[in-house]
Image (cartoon, rainbow, N blue to C red; front, side, top):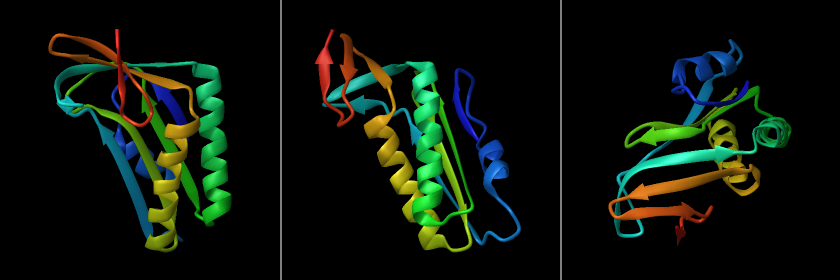
Length: 141
């Protein structure tokens, strides 16, 4: 399961998509919108994506994660559009027979997503806006 979506991410859908009877572990990563960045008070975020390419790359990451770590299944969901403080912006669920594999695979999946998927974040803070680079640095607009 790979989704790029405007509506809120339903965590239970991701868990249901990956969990099976042979699995003893489900690792879950949630990225949430925080209220600060680079010393500024953030009021909301906007995510933009090259949708077709993003979904294709997210599928590649899920497949690569499954192969590399020997996990059962991987589900990835990322929001686009306007998000408020506290909203879940990205979620990754990984099921595996053992917790170490699931946790390692989950970290690999989010780190790889941040590096390779064409999704851009625009931060709205008190007094202005900025595009935020993958490493968290902002360029003022």
